[in-house]
Length: 461
Ligand code: BES
Ligand code: ZN
Image (cartoon, rainbow, N blue to C red; front, side, top):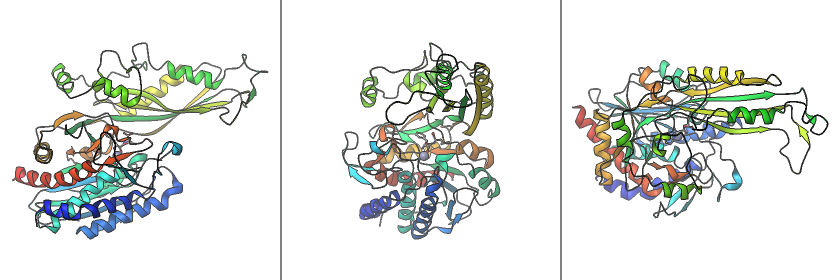
């Protein structure tokens, strides 16, 4: 049987299995779901074993486990290491979901006329990681696996992958490979395939502004004491100037200057500002002066407040001048910016702009470095050929705005380059309510992956 015939024959089961996986609320950031995270790890383990992987193990870490498995058919052949994650982002705000985040349903949308599966993690990254398990199953079952495979599917990507680095360092030998293959990114459109050639880095901090030692009556004290919420809002607003440049001193010092040729090329990718605005229901785009939307979301660093709270947020009105205000702030970074350095610059600046009437505390969270993947390598060429074969159209290279910090880490620790062959769409609502993944994309991914193995093995000969 050919791989194609096998895929056609097993299409329905592949979807049913993904639906089972999507029912498990493996939210890594919330310890109330630790058991479910472990259940999802076991699910992956069982499916890897069923597909024919060997040495399958749920490896304990100080956090959530990493599932490992491999199939070594011949030491002299190349080895592909597949990385993915089975954990998901918290689903809230729950009231904005049209169906339960862990009750997968299939619905048609304008961009997914063949249907899409709606559930948290459908696209990021259960659906995409599971494509690899099914592609592997199909290659083995039809006697078409052309090289060695290793799987490393982790359970805390969405909360910073803190235990992955020690795991990689301690398991260098076990993870030795020629290339890392990841499907955790997007393509431009279903009729415009692309391969991700860059990811942004991340610095994430939490800030706390403290004013008076207790909540105060806003009539009795209001006007005479610094209100932490007013102050925090002003401090956050001051982090951008009128051109939407970030005002933190030395923030841009190390930013990679992208050549005008490359900028020109990236702006040739199909992009409709009108569609973009309509999709988001906004009347105007916004961002750093001098850059296009495609540039602002890929080659430029950004700073965004992700959450802000303090004071009274219950029903009705309570006249209170709060003692504290808080915010979570992320900075997306570009090549050559160091996450640690930027976190330090932020802390120094934020503390320096606080008026004397408040105290400021900055707490760093996880971070990670940006990554660019070259296009003149056998792995990029293999991905290019594989997508061209399955989509019937050559993919274009495109830098993405998201972060997968372990890509830079893999290069440092394992000395291996990554191919980012993702199949989602930016409009699939990852990290948002009503996340979904097109059935077309799921099956197209499963179809494309074996071509990658085949072309990669041929190109490495
Ligand atoms: N799959 C995403 C990253 C991504 C999304 C890359 C879209 C390219 C296009 C990944 O799971 C993710 O969300 N990563 C986090 C970083 C992490 C340190 C929490 C992110 O980008 O916010
Ligand atoms: Zn992801």
